[in-house]
Length: 270
Image (cartoon, rainbow, N blue to C red):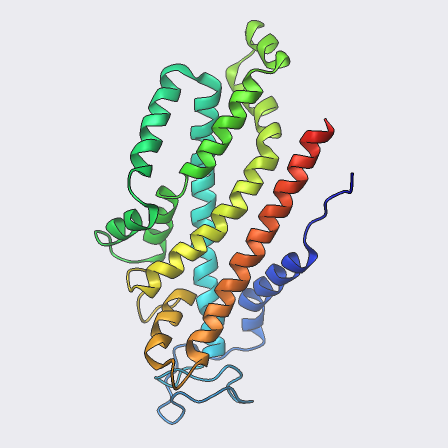
């Protein structure tokens, strides 16, 4: 069977975007908040590589700064959501019984409402900020990871060596950390990449609707929203932040699919 490999192009794109958002500011120290009344909606040029917006601000520098905000929110949300999903899923799959019953009720309760509408409801009652968005997105994005890990934890619990360890009265904490987590690690990382792409899209969607990052702060989603009113005369204002959102999420999805294929292949080879 042919060995699966990680998508080099996706990793290269993600690496380039990280360099763009965190290292390039050292080379391109243009103030993303600086207004220029004489350079309103200027197309891409040598002076402004990606053009300017309706207030004369440099799109290139704003794309860098907005990327830092979008990626931090996405990464923070994905980490918290994945850890919540890990704890919930492993607890339900290992302990089963009443804990599993409570898990099913809680997950069904969250899934009763469409995730994006739940996001809209929560953001309408909280003041928009990066921290608030991280908490809101993570609290509405852990269910998929939890259900996936719960299912896998059920299978691990039925393995003979786990049954022997439980009969031998080995500490539950030791069983979970020493045996469960290493077996769940590949599936966890697959789920994490999906959660990261979903969190970035969620932040972009909320900011586009005006419920996420608000001026004077910026993210790729808020930049996309600002450009919709001038799209017919200044396509570059919304095109470049939209392109960055697409590149990040598409690369993460390809990486997730590749990791899942590698994980499935290892399972088949056992």
